[in-house]
Length: 186
Ligand SMILES: Cc1cc2nc3c(=O)[nH]c(=O)nc-3n(C[C@H](O)[C@H](O)[C@H](O)COP(=O)(O)O)c2cc1C
Image 1 (cartoon, rainbow, N blue to C red):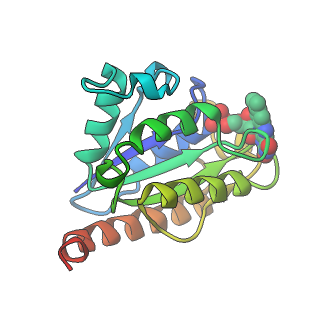
Image 2: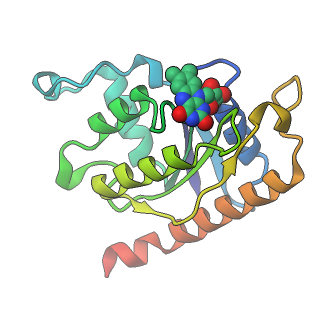
Image 3: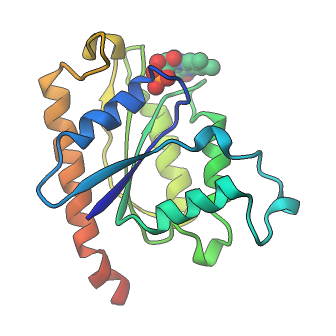
């Protein structure tokens, strides 16, 4: 089973990207997690450009999502919402609405912030957007507040509670993806 990890932060030392790297080390057997790193290359959404063939970065993202069994998002919170670059990429993925790559796709959302609340509002916003697009959104969030204290100087997760919660999220996502074909056929 393949999970695609998408971080909403472009920053090299992003805590959200580090969270996805930690998730990749906490996977159940038979599950792989691949990090998608093409966010910065996605152009601003313009409906006039939303034609075939799609811009290369958009086509690559759509294919990466379509080829994954599930998607794990890690999002920062920017001004109480999701980063514009992430929303922009999701706007591209959402089209065409009826057949978009996220439709019926199991997805889960986690998030990290430097403040106390761990990007909870941003995670809620992202779940709302993903549901509107038609993804199968897992309930619940993993709010990693005070992010700089959870990782060492090499960006490795050092908080065992967060690691356990991350493992639970990934296991739930993998379980949902295992059920996906049956649900899709129903
Ligand atoms: C433009 C901007 C807006 C931000 N707004 C919020 C916010 O609303 N809530 C919050 O908890 N943190 C906010 N932050 C702080 C982020 O939580 C912090 O920069 C975090 O490290 C970003 O995630 P990253 O490490 O994955 O890049 C903001 C940061 C930036 C750059």
